[in-house]
Length: 386
Image (tube, rainbow, N blue to C red):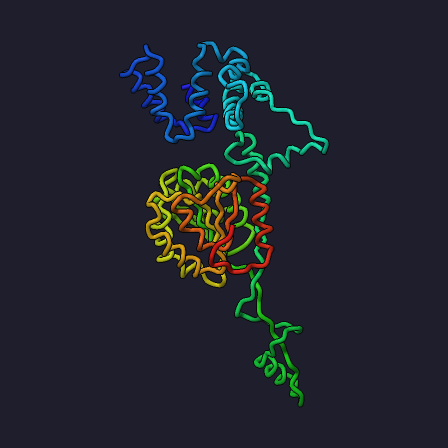
């Protein structure tokens, strides 16, 4: 039970049901063999490949000594890690330290391996700047909490567009015939005073299609905080989540309290951290929702890594129709965080020709750059750009 609490604090969703199943499994498998004990717990506590490294470190640190919780674990953690830990291993060590140290009274700074020292003649970057450039996937739990607070203050400055509706305006170019005649009847004047109108300008609808598959789990959860801030800052924001099915969560995100809003979203969505059927999902969206939400120069944000379980089936036709139904289609892909990224996956290659912009979304800085991209004048690009 204590080991499950450590895993849960480190970021692995281990609930009481899995603990009960683990106890029942251990009654059958026994605890006489360490390898059997290890793989029994791993089979019940892990449901994603990305969780294996964290589970492996937690297991060896926690079960190294039965009296571990009474000792300082800094040396134990350094023995588990290699002499030159990678950034991913340092991230896992930070999360594991945060999960275990509150129970033994050791600060997380003492547990983490010493950082590499780089000498720079310039000024040292502040903690805020470092957090802006940190990848969501490598953040510790404390850093994720700070990032959520910073994201809640971000806004998406989409320029206003002219609509077909007009309003009275003394400086407008369009003559208001009805208003001019009505004004002439009031005083019985021989001259007809001219009244003018101008076209109204308002924000276009913003439609967000967010991938919540297993490979996008950490990024999509952070981006939902950003979507909540945008939804409560302006009108006509429509949000859809998809994995193996399409779910409209617009109504839930309109709640002012972000915790209550995301809790309602979690209850409404049934396919968290599963597979991805991008082609089938976009086809269903075009059939059921496009005419409702893609009018009046709507802008579409597609957040996905492009890894399609159906190998691109129906994807080309669905993307082409989606692109033609909106004024601007922007694809946000966390895989662009790597400079060596190449569009080798089938889904990525089929989607790229039908987007107007291809941008990364992996940290706070990328969300800030997204706002700057909206300020730039839009030039349609049917061939797609990066």
